Length: 223
Ligand SMILES: *Cc1c(COP(=O)(O)O)cnc(C)c1O
Image (cartoon, rainbow, N blue to C red; front, side, top):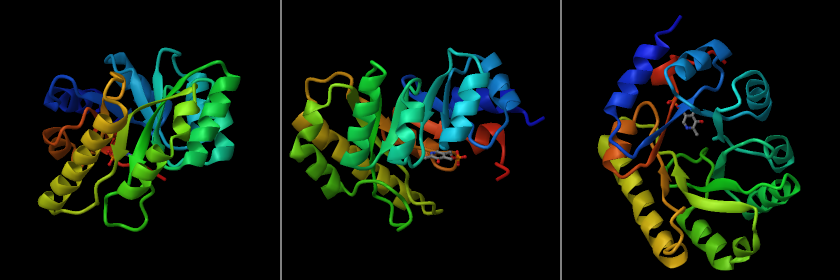
């Protein structure tokens, strides 16, 4: 089996204090997750609703699950009863549906707004202006069952470290702007989820509070 234990500790040792690891376990079997769990890891991320449901049902209940992928509104109801955080909210429609389903479950669900800064067209997320508009619109203030805890983003998948760094900086600038304008008094608005296997060391230098790392811990995914 892949050396999950060794890799996990290597990653954890490389993170500054205050940066949390979301171990991205998508496409990896339960035994890999159990190996990380045995080392004390309790926070995992998945990007497909059915896979997450199966894992939630069969793995220890004190695991916190973050939904990190693109979430269709018709899937929200399946994860609303147990998911800890939805990291990639990229529309008002999705935010409203999470609020609606969380209310049905009598829960408040933490979410991050996903920012699109990368140059790749394929990435999801709100452009800076779309993010500003969503917040300016104000409807989110009426939603009592979602709590907006910060921003999430994926940098371009490139080798150019300066480009990656510049995208993380743009994300942090936007985080500061939004924090000051809408969440200055909200201590829970404090999360900056950026950094994956290939760029997390840059991400933590650029103010990430939450890195999402899969491959470095669990090895290559078999799709
Ligand atoms: C799969 C995925 C990750 C983890 O990527 P690795 O390169 O395996 O570390 C992080 N964030 C999101 C949104 C993902 O879909």
